Image 1 (spheres, rainbow, N blue to C red):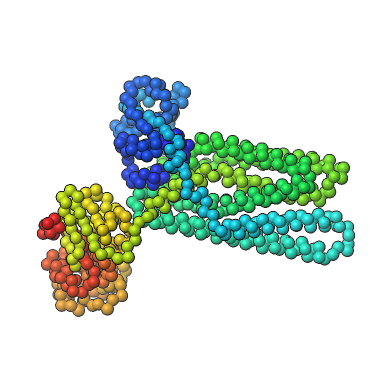
Image 2: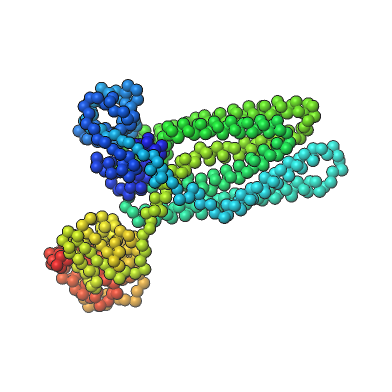
Length: 594
């Protein structure tokens, strides 16, 4: 809220996480100060007992303690003789007196000073407002041609009205109208088809960017909300933008035609346009200044997905009621309809005198009314564009963070892996057929979190693992514990890839099968597979996986260590892969740390 207040933005938690690359859910006092510096907000901590009125800032942070003794910060907004409290532990803001606030106030506040120029230069500038494809020009040209055909249709209406009493009208006149009518329908359908294709292309491209971001980063986002925002951006860049441009061109053409027909009626329409656009801009100014984004439907969907929250009946019913009653009266739309009817009545009134004195024909009035209907529809498109442009711009800035953080290196092959302990200066090169590691260097965790430990540095092909795409890591490195058990036989769960290799004929493997009484043709699934069968499948899968490196966690409980070592010795001769074995065994720890 602090950023939104000082810079008139519409930040949410996801956008903040994206821009600062922060994955934690709880922020400390130090974290808040560091984040504020990135947004050019200078902070100053104050200790105040019972004199908050002396603070000359309208909005600030204050430390409070709740009923269970939990210390946390709340946003405080000064309102005359009372305070508005925005508590992250509560669903809505709370109006409170100074006296009541002092009972929970600990005496510590954080005030802010902003630098709008620096913020605007760093966080509001866009690479591109719109991705304008060459095909967009073709769509606009089609619509210009379509409005030209509409004018020709009106021309036919005028000519036909003059000769309506003539029973010998040429059939070419009707053929002329029929051709124009059919061509116009054809062009409109092509325009709809193109617009839909542009939207699908734009949305697909943005969803791919979002997908790569989710794979490569560990930041937890509200996926449902993010998907809704991508849909809005894609729709605005296609449907809204192109319809607005086409509608604006159509409106200018229609105004020019009406100006040619009658200047008085033109002035009525033009005055209505100017007046309405001014009202819309003023309305948008106050809405954006006091905006509060409504996400009731999205919050409801997110709530339904979280089973832990779903059990809270009171909270769930409250969110459902918010979703039902979220739609407020659109006063701007009502005002538009009223003014549009007033302008229509004024046109009727003026046209009546013009008709009475034969300055215009009745057919001309009918043409003007039809043109006005088209013009009104186009004007609504322009107003919608202006109403939602700021929202689009801020969501696009947020979306650009997905692209910025997706610059990860993709490796065609892995030549070497090095693990460095920066505290002990220990270095391990995983260049053997079987590489032994202690549990301190569990590569599964490092690959998943992209080296979340500050003490451990992992280099692959001399490149920090943080800079390598997870797609490359998953392509060349496989963790055996992640492989699922399928509904099939034990032997088919082991031979998951087509291979001519048959290790089951080897004497060692046959001995292990007999020793542990493994039935290779037994049909299993995830529910009925035993611990022994799981270990056996995991142990023998190393022969049938086509990866450069196999991550092998030595966490067997039933199969004997000696049998495992014998199988690993056999693995050296049979497989082209390299094995990275992680274990809590003391001797492995000594090998890793030598």
